[in-house]
Image (cartoon, rainbow, N blue to C red; front, side, top):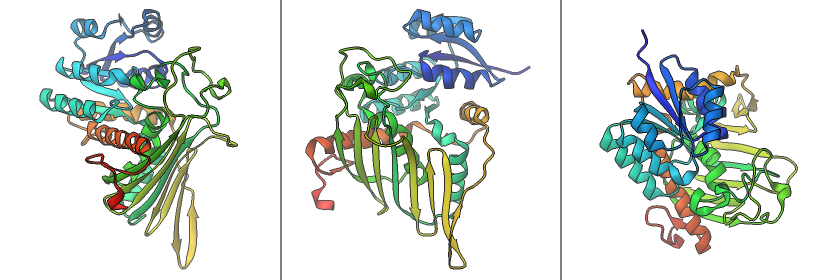
Length: 362
């Protein structure tokens, strides 16, 4: 008989259904026991659809009754730290959607709580588990790119503002705009491929050009007429890394471009790679000839989804090695975001560690 871990989902929005509920239902050693959302109807509908017995509107009440071993936190960003700390204190391992927190101070508190209570915290960085990403990470780790000295990352949309007037566009609740939303995917992925070198300084600029046009709203996201919109819809920046490498990035919810593009481009001393709109290409040379290689990977979206959740459960059981997306990586991203917004406000680069003007280092 399989000894099952008890699981509960906190937050019943789009990502919760598209990703978390399916991911954990696919695992035979996990019992999906409860769904919690402040919208009782939303929680009840999802529970009925997936035959989940427990329905709650208060996560503290849910913990008292269910005592889950694992929880997913798929709530607005400003609640991530609060609920994660509570879950850890009440005996649960935490799978928290990105970003881990809305500040580096919150992320540091999460790590301290994790260590205090002896639990695991993994961030929902699903792009690290894509077939292309898994292949490319091993390709890089095997030395095929040599030293990666320069990288570019971005996600630019023509019309992709999510939830205009909701928590997405309220800085106090989201932690930021497009950088914290889309940068958590592709800025993170570029740093991950590079081996997560520390940033020495951060330079950035933010823009807000599409506040008053609903033509740039993202399909499927309902907004609130007259709601707050005090975050950037475009963010561009540069990281000077301690290993002398550089990383430039460009993110926008709305731009006057022909088509959307999400990408990571890596330039190394022995080879290069690009992952653009899901297509992986490798670059190098042989016998004095430049080569372009397009790997033919067997794609299985269901398996890719399952891999993230299988990995977390295996790590909880002591069978999965080190976490692929640990809380420390969320802290590092939060430090970059904090420094980026300081740089944008100051109009110049900022040192990452003490967030002081970096004129002396560039």
